[in-house]
Amino acid sequence: MQGVYDDILREQGFVEIGVLFYRFAMNIWWHPQFKIQIIHILVGSKYLLKGFKSYYLKSITEQGETWARDISPFQDYLEYHFREIHIAFSHFRDISTTLAGLQICRKLSSETPTVQVPTTEDLAQLQNQLMEKHLNEQNTNDLLSLDTGTSDLLLSYMRRRLRSLNKEKKELQEKMKKKKEQVNLFNNLQKEYQRKGSAACFNFTLNSNIQVAQSPLEFKDALDSIIKEIKDAHRYQVTQKLCGGRLNIHIAEADEPVLVWLEEWSGGALSPCQMERFKDGL
Image (cartoon, rainbow, N blue to C red; front, side):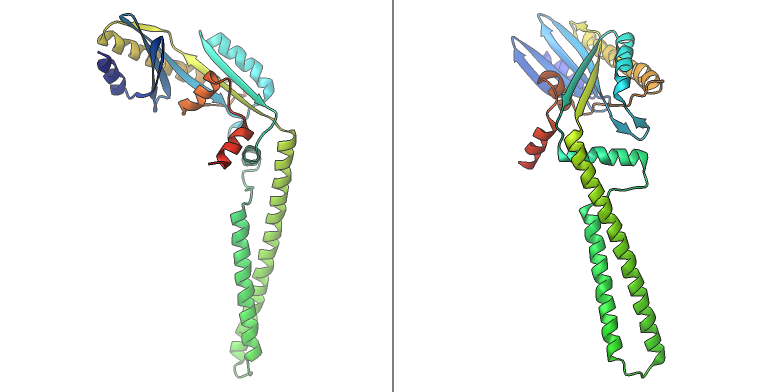
């Protein structure tokens, strides 16, 4: 009989992502398109179903920046508009080099979108171009030194070519100088972010009513009811009223259930510096 219920979930686009066994079995399913999580538990002859949809706050987006002063009215909104809401918050005094760099890039992108932080690849490309101009200039000088004065036209062309190469080389040198200054500024900002900055992770989860089913038909109806309830809440309460309202809050749907599990079930999000060390060890 269990296979019949699993088939109903699969037909609706859900994939099984976990099963927990302790006194009873809790099956966990995930819908990649709707970003909805379903758990169902067999209690006696009845199945209990509940749905979840999680979101996280974004600090900086193209539409603006989320400020700490807006968190309190945001939480008031959640408490007023939703029958049940789960909130998870983690705060870290230390941030990693990668996170500091990403934060600077986001801030520059939102405030000065025309300014791009140069990378080591950009500098290497400019260095190669400068070397190429230098070699061309040197080759042209070598040819001029071999000239016997037999052709005024060729001599004039080579001198114009030499002036052009010299101008291009100076332009590249100036461009490289500015890029290096930008890199130094970025590195200094990155160090300041690491020294004075902090990181926070704010997640909240919408929850459906618990549905009870004793047959495959009731199970399908319960699943349809949960999906509709969460999709309606997402469309009207989150997308239209929250994101389109007066609160200066910027959120995104959680599209990876593992991150939600870490926040809700393992005592909070992982420290950015711990994640950095873990990444470096791979």
